Length: 222
Image (tube, rainbow, N blue to C red; front, side, top):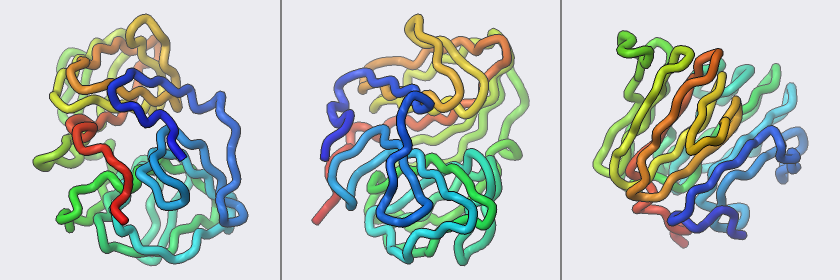
């Protein structure tokens, strides 16, 4: 399966306009944003766990990172409340689920295969002091990518021109980019060489951004 697999094009997905698609596990549904591969795939996805649902135990051969958007995600390593950013690098394993239900934004098979840094962070607690209406937390940095979380006040402008492509998820509020309003749940991907230039809406915005990684985009290794 290929979905939004041309990384040389600008892509916007308003996720609230997508239907939830059942996964192989009862009570776990998905909204797919981009994908190369079938059930094992380089993928960017919203995943919704119904209360008391679980996914089967599995190893993340290609690594997994995710944000908890609502509810509490759980596995044998603990509880991960709303606003948590998690990196589970290649070779890690778990049995995910949620007692109360939750929604996560998750990326699979997008790690350096030698990465072994496993961690979790409360994104809001990592924010720097506000400058010109923008507070930013650097969540992760390595030779391939930079991952950040930013809180923008109403009307604040924000530019990111890092090399290697830009990906943004609007977690709350709204921004305007390229003349288009992107509200909560909107996902934007810009190709290498394109700068991200946004202005926050009247309620401000919270956005997750990854840069540099699109140069390494490919299907999962066999």
